[in-house]
Image (cartoon, rainbow, N blue to C red; front, side, top):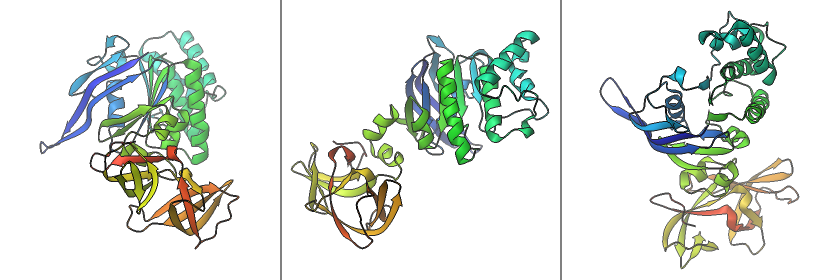
Amino acid sequence: MEIKLQDLTKIFQAKDKTETVAVKSLDITIPSGKLIGLLGPSGCGKSTTLYMIAGLLKPNNGRIFFGDEDVTDMAPEDRGIGLVFQNYALYPHMSVQQNIMFPLENIKVPKDEALVRAQEMADLVGIGDLMSRKPKQLSGGQQQRVAIARALVKKPRVLLLDEPLSNLDARLRLQTREEIKRIQRETGITTIFVTHDQEEAMSISDEIVLMELGEKRQMGEPQDVYDFPNNLFVARFLGTPPINMYDGVISKKNVLVNGKAIGTTKGADGEVFVGIRPEGYIIDKDGPLELTVYMVETIGRDTALIIKVPNTENDTFRVIVDASERIKPGEVVKMKIKPKKMFVFNKETGELIN
């Protein structure tokens, strides 16, 4: 089921009549059968967008289409959506089986059929042997699977997940996100996954939509968005460790940092921001960048060099090099830059230049 959001806008009005634009003129096409991650910082409008798709919030402007059907004014129960909330919203007095079957009771599915469908969904999410338990007898990951099974049992056209992993510990998050991906692939259902965690979004999404201040900043396959950020916000938001950002200058097509040419660009002469991914440095005795190592962290097969850079937004940068490079704190290291790991941005608009 393809989903189209056309010029979607949501404005909230406070008691004092002040207005907050939560989503602004959002245009997105979500391909049928794909898992799409809505990603961004708190307050960027991703959950608001999800709730408008679900029908729980009405947009001030714009239209929502499921395939060719305009569902903008349709009631939530008529849209054919399955919704999983952050807090699971399970009924504590009901068994797993009863929780999963509950949506079917509301639409008057015969009990025998409902039992079969509930068992099928429980088996699909890996809790088929827990049907008689109550929610308090389950782990957080098991409760989340019950919530997903309950959302799927209606055979929805669209599955919507609102930060479904945020209440789980790190190990369960990893396990459950793998399960979500498996379930989505096996069912083939169009799925929208809201998260503020870039690792979650990039690991399970077919495509991500990166949002800021209610607007789409970039959409694409996760690795493509990381490799080719089209603006400063995307470059800064994606990446762990984060991208290193320098004040730079374009002069006669050369990109200068601290007066040294580190690459070239087609941009016009002037001041710019220069972003370099931590893995974009190469130790080279003739390299133009001269960096003093403050600390060294060994992280498996890689080494992170902590570089003190005064008068920058973080004061320290991380440079990732191979662990075979024996660098000590206090050393001055010369570096050159991998061209595909360097990005030049307009200082006023934040748009990518190269």
